[in-house]
Image 1 (cartoon, rainbow, N blue to C red):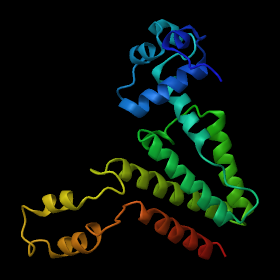
Image 2 (image 1 turned 180 degrees about the horizontal axis):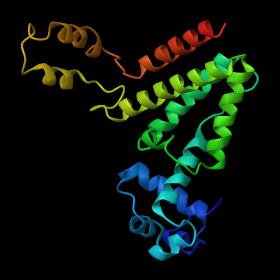
Image 3 (image 1 turned 90 degrees about the vertical axis):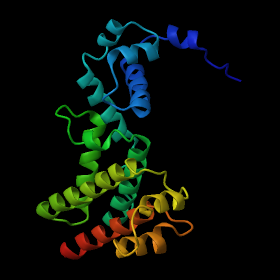
Length: 222
């Protein structure tokens, strides 16, 4: 049985770039990227701030590194299947990863110094689309539309005022309470007939929308 590592043991571990980035991604998950500072990161690692700079020269370099780590968590499109199934698998994995790292969606395509995992991911997706017979122009459309959808959906989920799968009947009722039913009849109908029903989850729309996009791309690529 491996003994559990204590805080003192962790402090004595040699500081490496990977250790810095792992701590940074955990900190970003907890407080967000904007609140992530070298000082807070040093506190998490039990070192002095100047020690961080020996491995990662700036906050921007840290963000480059943790974005690359997020890309590394996303499944690549499986090779032994058709392009639609492969891209569907990759897109579902991507949303799951972005839901673990709510801060990441706005940053994933913003980096001008992409890492190896980022480049490997993009290369694999392009290879999957090319391998499915899509032209260069259709591949460009497909990649842009699919990722805009995945990033947008994940960003919307991250900002919902409730947890997916949570019973939101009381929240929905409270939001509508100040208004009469005849002021916003369609909203009241939708909320009552859909949102307030048992088992409602915003996430159920993700795969429905993804399949619409993939079916549309397939139809237009023939």
